[in-house]
Amino acid sequence: MKLGSFPFQKALVTGGAGFIGSHIVRALLNAQIEVLSVDDYSAGKRQNLSSLVNRELLTEVEADITEQNNLKPYFKNVEIVFHNGATKKTKCMRDPHRDLEVNAEGTFNVLEMARACDVKKVVLASTGSVYGEAEYHPQDENHPLNPVSYYGVSKLAAEKYAGVFQHLYGMDVTILRYFHVYGPLQESSDDDGGVVAIFLRRALATLPLTIYSDGTQQRSFTYVEDVARANLLVATKRESYGETYNCASGLKITIQQLAETVMRICRVHDLPIKYADATPGDIKTFDVDNSKLKKLGMTTWTDLDEGLRKTVSWYLANPRQN
Image (cartoon, rainbow, N blue to C red):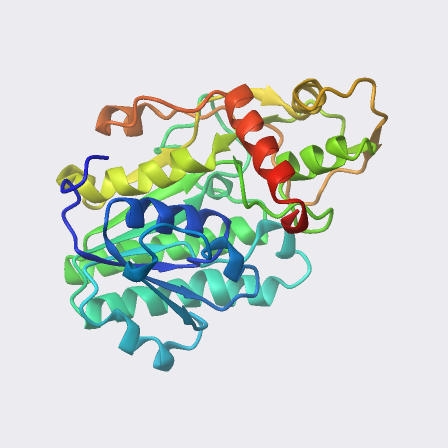
């Protein structure tokens, strides 16, 4: 994005110290936009923001989006909100009540504060999990919404709140449904990490890989910098008002193929692969139609090999953050 093309001067990013949120903060700072990051640091990390350029434009705030009374001061004079504060899908089975509280009530609080403070636009991060099991392929934005996980339900509730705020108050909200985001800064622990990050960490350490189910489940892995670009893109387009977009690379690859690709990129061969029971609420096949976002201007996506190589380089340069 060219400097000067961004139509807002001050942005607030919830979950700004998190994996995806910190990449959005980085993209905004690179465009010389003043940014306020709001994060409760339950998952976000301070080091994710520690080495960014233009840090004089960044203000970091520790706050919980479920505590509405404490949020209002931070929304004053903000022109756009990128709402990425959420629980992780990996945690929804362990604490579904917190999942509901953060993803649904937290989103309501963010929308209410945006309304009260006359924020011009909100970009809401949602998920492909709102679709549930596919009734047809590829899944476009008109696919029925029948989530099969707590996480999908709570994120769908967030989308519905956004629709109500648009209907009642004319709020400009754009929804981006993320799919299988990976890249530098992603959590790589076996308990809470994304599958790409876990596979890369274990492959670099020549440890066995674990596949849940039989490995034939299909995904559309999307590089995190592309997701950040998509956020800034929809913020610049008036025609994104009230719209929902699949934010996905369109890639189609099975988890078995991912494991093999990771081993090739990491230059390790014949690592043992263990197979375990499928994760509850896991969806078998994602075949995603991203043509709507392409028509808006998101015409290029990072190739999987390139994205994996960039991610490996980051992990090797930052071993203590893995």
